[in-house]
Image 1 (cartoon, rainbow, N blue to C red):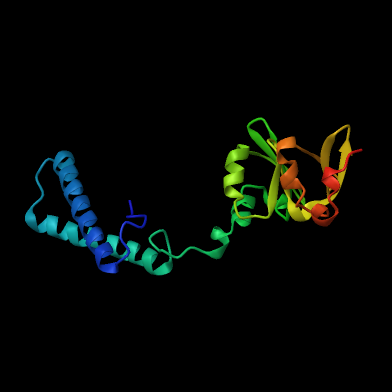
Image 2: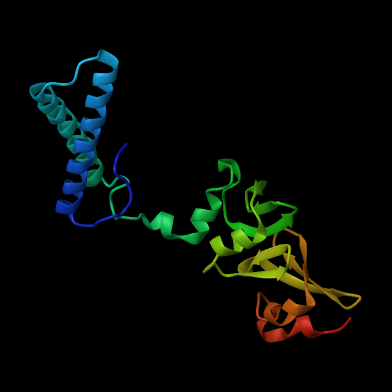
Length: 195
């Protein structure tokens, strides 16, 4: 087991933790040797064992620390970007520009400009991951990318947004005002029109 996480940020503190870990591991291996082999470890062999374990822990954790592994505080920009983080859930062949998300039970149908895929995720979790992305949840089971809205249609008092992929997404009454600000409706006010 390697010491992981950001328990401490100072290299000296990390070194102290690695030393304690090596000491505990040496003690555990010595006890295991005593039980399996049947004789207690001599002081010389315990010191040799501690040296080998300490060197191994130091080399492995040191390489991970210097190389930007789990002990590093560096986070790549790709991991910080919400859009990229969400798209990593999709199969490689459909990863592209996100168009819309539709909830289907416990699954989400995620539509991109390269295709669509079902993923096991709830809409609330997806919305938390999509925070900061220019989109709108038009209905409890629909989310659209604002740039993907191409038109609006009103049928029997119900509003629908028409997306660039041709899909019609319903707009809930409670979200009608928020939908007025998206896509081509910012200046035209078409969402509020009757017809």
